[in-house]
Length: 224
Image 1 (cartoon, one colour):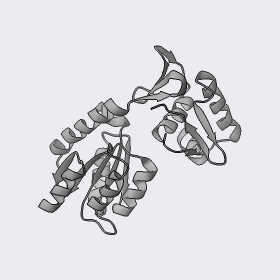
Image 2 (tube, one colour):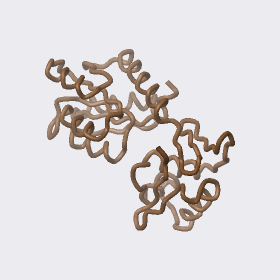
Image 3 (tube, rainbow, N blue to C red):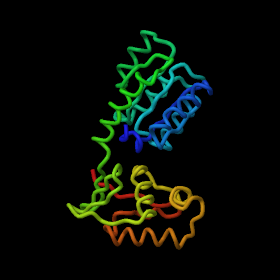
């Protein structure tokens, strides 16, 4: 299950004890596990985090799991979604199938039931999303943390790798300055340090590979 380590998982359940146990369990296999307490919270976290896999309950306050998934599926057909619920109801099952879910699991969920499903999800995620094409022919392998131009690997520092990874994981939006500060510099980042790392990366890639979004932050220029 090494491939699971770099996958981003969002677990949604309104029962705190179940949610905390699930997050703790998933964290043994994955470095990027997040949680939400109901459908509305889950929808907000989805928009913010863009997870690769969502595991969600159905019956939750404010917004149930099915309605949340319908909102996600309006613009996103590819995120892997697993339903985990104590209520095996035919009406929900039919809707779940129509929404293109990976699996419908009945609680309590056991390790030997969940892991094969996650393994299937990660195979698809790795195949579809591990290699990113950056402007001007550069490619970044997010699982192996390597940058290439054609067959030549380009050496990056640890901070440059973290910076580039954060940009690529959030490629559909501008990454804010405070996000770089927390992810790359552990909470303290000077303006000079930020400008320096952008300047160095632009030297190693194309000048147009990283876009400056005035007053907000930076965004990666992906192709395709």
